[in-house]
Image (cartoon, rainbow over all chains, first blue to last red; front, side, top):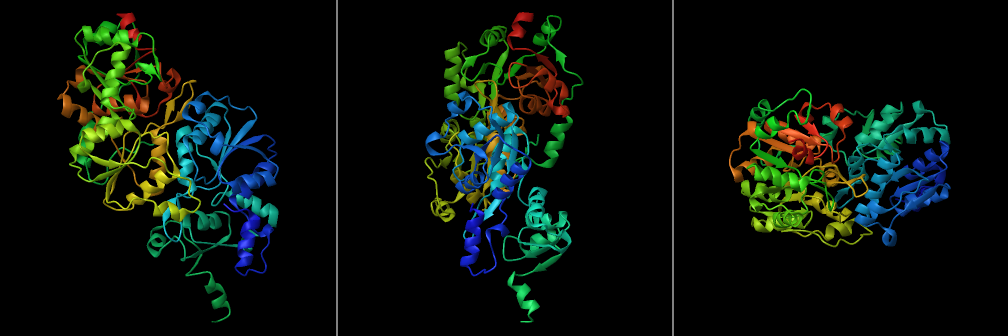
Length: 233
Length: 323
């Protein structure tokens, strides 16, 4: 996952003249901000990408992450002493996921009663060429093992909503969430008293929309329609 | 917890058969503690004892005190001893050797592991296609023995870009994705399984759904069920569950050893949602031993009627000590 600055740069490169880092809210930023806002001062066990780790570093939160050389073996997971300073497990997308990481996190949650957070619970990750397991599928390895669901930072959770409001002062009634996923974007908009608009250029097709209980307030084929309709093209 | 039990694709078990089985299921009111007062009646009332292994006979590599002596004690009395384990990592031959090393002689035919059951299940539905396996050598050996064609991914590199994962997926017609415990599980293996499951004709089979396993230090580590949940979540498919408490395991056992007298059979295990549920679902008594993952408190707290045992005791050795 990219950092806020990287996302802003990507948009700038594509021609967005108005965007800045402060306009970008990622689930990594959200979870780190949430922990800071709630006075968290201990250490986090991180499972996720380098982008997630960078965000925690940027926000001054101490973390431990296993990768490559320091990854735990099956025996190592069971015999290693658990650090008392670790008070939370935070999990994001990690394509280098392994038994060592999940096993260590399992022990932290069950033996040390650590808090459990996830960046998002998307079951799949849809790319232009393929469908891959999403963060939600990876998180279920841990949540099923410990018999507990995580607090989710990203959409549709209101954790990201609270962070948004506190950082931007937005008025929900004059805010519209535009997205392509019903169970994250649209649900997020609807359950936080914002307006919601579904675009059909992503994962949702007509059939899914008709069959869903989640109803967007607005719908259009693609984002560009907004300008086209507004300028009568 | 949620146990996904029934095959929805190739329809191994239809709804009517299921209802018949459930109506015969055994609901006990309050579990009875085993003691020297009821032990004779308990032992004399049973001809067949089914034993779970982890948490009953041993914990990891350590024998639980008195367990092997009790097995030999019951065997000498002429009782039928059968082993029914959800552990998919070892083959039957390895299990037989393990029992021998510990001091108990038995036939391979008396041992039923979920690895064996998985291969036997595929054979029973006349499965002739290729299996993509995410699991350990136990399932591999049993698949080979049952003449089922399979392949695995052994070393999967870390891919920087998602497209690279797809490019490396073998372009093979896969009829089933089979999952058991895999301590070398990687993102790529799940991505590959997901890719094959997107074909409507590909079935999803799991050896067992035990969410967590007891670890060496007395805590829990992730089990096969937690691993399978990744593929369940990503694919949106419920797998066919072969192991306890699924009805398939019981059918596999009886098709090998013939019908057993349920009134004179007892399942001995340490897990409520697998061992005890298995016994209740299939209509025979169960004995919960507290030497494994379940505490007395958890036994009393359980809300699911099929998870409540007929009897309970501290450890298997009590059977011998009380009589």
